[in-house]
Length: 269
Image 1 (cartoon, rainbow, N blue to C red):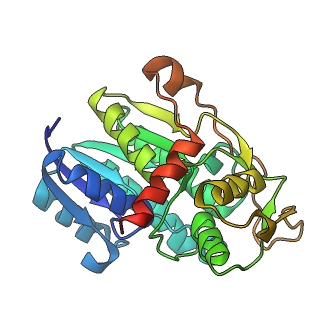
Image 2: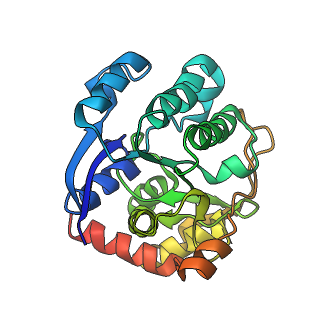
């Protein structure tokens, strides 16, 4: 199915934005991107002019700074990026899909709080916008140090790692998320919706499943707990309730299927 729409995707150099671009480039008539290399994203006159040049029907807004320490230390820039940029783009005469975070449901740090504010701004500007709360795993993150990437690279080199048994989530593979967002756009869903796995696991259990699917030595994985003296506060439970996507749309996203798809993608790279 091809959408008769013009699409603008922000943050296509990141882990999720890249997957959106790869998927939607064959699903829409015209697909354009906005990234930091295009100009100053905190110059909202530039951003507005850039976006209006393409007159998008839909904006998928992925850009965010997920470096929690940076967000704590650079509050002004973080606020401008997560809230000011979101306000600029969601004020345009089009539909926005705002990619939020599972931690917005229980904010513990400045990143969480600004993403929550971004959600509110997005919907205040247009009640028909779509806000996606989610948690993801995959490859090609900006830092190259996401949970999966760190674990995969370490285990590949037979380096021992620690998985937290007291931190719970239900992350999905980036491609699972992208396909689900496509479905929700087609179904014209509006407001906030959670897209996450039909399961809740600790990060230790998640890494155990990584070892199983990717055939790593499970003895390299040690059970641990999240440090109490971490520089940035984090919630220990960021699992999302997925009853709405299950009951309304019959969408169920499974961990083993996501990891198996990721394994296959890595093998054909």
